[in-house]
Image (cartoon, rainbow, N blue to C red; front, side):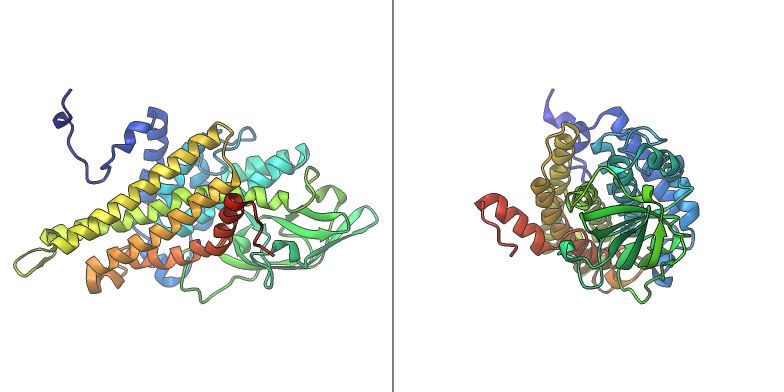
Length: 394
C-alpha cells in the first residue's frame, strides 16, 4: 500500500499510536477522558488560587478508573503494564503536573514501597484502601537540609522496648497534609529504615507549604515527627539502607519520563492551534518561516521524547530497565519539555503568560519537575559514572 494512503497527523507525526495495543489505547483514552472532564475545566482556577480543593474526591475517582498503584498487582491494584502506566502519566500531566504528582506519589512511592518492602499485614491493611483512593499516601524522604544527599538524613528512629520512636522533619512532601498514611525513611542503628506511619499518630503533623509559584494545584507539606511512637511492626521488614527509597524513586522517575511529555504536548498543541488562527501582517503567523521552524523543532523533540519513554516502558515490562536508563529519560525529557513550553510561549506572545492558555502553568510546573526526584546535575552524574566508571558524586 502506498504511503500516500495514510494521512499525516500533526498530533502524531511519527505514527506512534501504531506501537500501542488496543488495551494500551483503551487505558490512555480512559485517563484522557477523565482528565478532560474533571481537571481541565477547573485547573486554571485551582492554580490561580494555589490549592487543590477537590483532592479527596479526585483521589477516589482516580481509584475508580484504576489509576492508583496501577502497575502493581493484587490488593485491588490494576496490574497494568509499565507502558500503560506511562500513558496514564502522560495524560494526567497534560492536564497538570500536580495531578500526575498526586498519582505518582500515591502509586510509585507510597504504595510501591509497601508493596515491595512491606509485610503481608501492611499490604493488606493499606494497599486496597490506597488503590481505591479511600486513603491518600505520602512519601517522606527529603529533609530541609538534605535533598540530593538522602544519606545525610537526620530523622532518627530509635527502639524503645518493642516500639519505635521517630523524630525529625521532612520537607516538600506531596500529599502530606491530606495523607492518611506516610511512608517515612529514617536513620536507625542498623541503617536507614522505612516506616508505615498513620498520620493520626500522636506527635505527627503535616503543615501545608504555601506561597509556591510552581505546582500550585498540588498539596505540598512539611512532615514533623515529634517523638512519634510506633509499634514494632510499623517498620518495612524487607529492606535496610538507601536501596529502599532509591528504588521507589526510580519507579516514580519513570512516570516523570512520560508525564513531562504530557505537559510538552499540551503546550505544543496550544501553540499549533494559536499559530493557525492568530493573524499578523495579514496572514496566520503559522505561515511565517520562523514560526514553522519553531513548531517543527518542538514536534521533533516532543515525539522523540515519547518514543524514548515508550522504549523505556518496554524495557521495564521486560524486566530489563536499569536506573541509569531512567536517569537518561528524566534528564532528556524534562529538559526538552521545558524548552518546548518556553518556545510555545514565544509563539503565543503576551497571551502565553495568561491562564487562558496552559503554557505558563506548565512551564512553571516543570521547573519543579526538573528538580524533584533528582536534579539535572544528579542525573548527569549518574550517567557520567555509568559512561566512565568513575564516581564524581564525592
